[in-house]
Length: 255
Image (cartoon, rainbow, N blue to C red):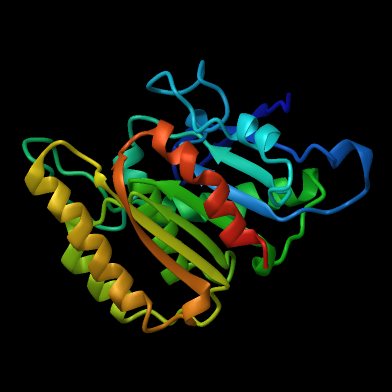
């Protein structure tokens, strides 16, 4: 059974101490090899059901046990807290009757690239270059990964954008995508399920917004380097993201 470790690091921009969850490849302690790195949002939900916010994780450790031929990666999970909606989204928005949120995504990514990544590169045997560094997340975490593709491709070139919740600020995000220069991207994966939510109106918004963003990005990325999937009956939860994880990782890191 693979294990994971946790350390804490303080972010002045985020104004909080952030727990970081780390999974090292099985071969890490038996070799002197260096490894690609994948940064993932909602780190508490990745490895351990007991840590996961809703009692079910992505099961990434078990997945690597089941599929040992998956690309070996150092996976860095970044804990989210009650400020998640602020930190993972680029624009202010309101959702139903909830208070206004959003707009602090650059604070989050500044922490990742200027504080966390240098720490990780110093502590672990990482390939430090953008071509060996990815970022991935689900829901607003998928928004974060897509935004990183548009604005932070000097640091990341592999992007996993899962069950993306673009619709609260779809028009603004589409404009950003149209105006972004993204020639550095090596791989970009996008998906959306057909049952992200039981609300029929919001479900159609999920699919429509993902389709629009994909239609913009596919004109800017070599066809074999971008993939978009509408997944039948897929629900907005960790159990379903766990099923897709091997497929996504193989696409992002096998070449």
